[in-house]
Image (cartoon, rainbow over all chains, first blue to last red; front, side, top):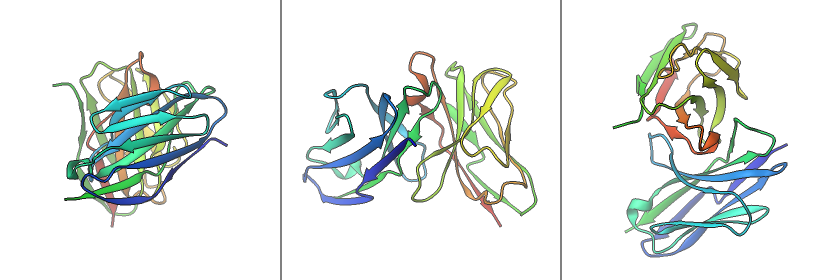
Length: 111
Length: 114
């Protein structure tokens, strides 16, 4: 069964303290892995797509990387405005129309 | 500005009542989706539609119904058959060039059953 597991469930950092969020996946052939940001009470906002192991994408203080079993979202020198829940999702090669979401990591950055 | 509009933002329902959540998009996207989000769980797919007048069940379709009479609109009805309808409902769309992984989401509708 295809599965996505995110860790940790919650992470509290001091402003400027870099860290990484993990997304482990089990899927029968990966078509794509996706990262989203979700603010409280809002819909998720798309961040990145990764297709193959070794690929990296960057946006401001965020960098997403991909291996054959997991993806990391690295946050460098975070600011309080980076506080949000970060969601990971995967699409299997066998699925043309659906993706599977993890339960997310709730990130809090203290000033 | 293009986007997805969901309404109402908050909705309260008595047990046994059907309710309809509205979703309208002006992104000219063919594909539209409905997801349900519960605390501590990932988003789960309820229904999706890739073209007008056609839709498919997702992973948790029981107790829900949809229609797709116009490209811009994809309303979701939560019926009295849905055993645990209290949740945050999210509508999304995607363009053919990006597939189901790069989704544009609305702001969500929070349904509470009293």
